[in-house]
Length: 260
Ligand code: PGA
Image 1 (cartoon, rainbow, N blue to C red):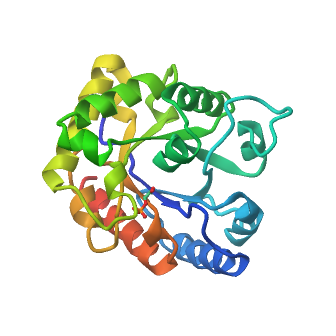
Image 2: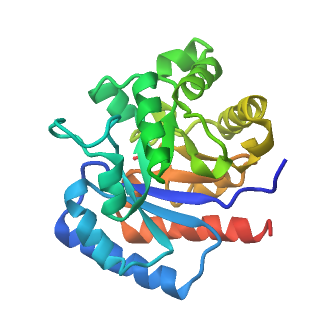
């Protein structure tokens, strides 16, 4: 298997942020990443109307990549309210979230739809961050591993390389609740995902980044990202504050430096 993948820390603003907060965040993070070359990739996923502003504020800083919160499963055309992968590319995105549990819940997105979206993303050169995770009831029924494997199996596009895609394990019950799974539970799930990928795509399965999301904060990020097979994190609430988010990025950078 290949060496430990370069970790990724992603900020998911969801439907939050103003023009003023977005500008401050972008400018502050731009200055910080330009004066500190981090050993991790940083991604920010603002709401669409703030894209341009964040892009300008980052001053085309290569250290931070713009990420869509979703993309359409189809190309340009008569689909009101949707945004295509090609439009995201033109807006300066390098990544896109697909299958976030809030989209699966609010918009009834199935694994098949998520796969179609991820496929369009890959086709247009975007890296899809495919989100998976079990509900509280599924975990209590002892079905967490099975549910997550099935989501991955059905939503992963056909790939030729492990750097084309990121998997975000986000237990639904941990998102926005302040409830973190036991570290052993996170570790077990990430190992299980890695083993599943190895069975499915032997040669490059080790290159796929498997990141954790759900109530990640500056105070718990270190112990989560220290786990083997946790290659970064997807941060919601704590990413809105540029100081909290920066501290998570620094933690990731320090951990990665201790491995290289
Ligand atoms: P949270 O959200 O960090 O606020 O729990 C994570 C996510 O939904 O990606």
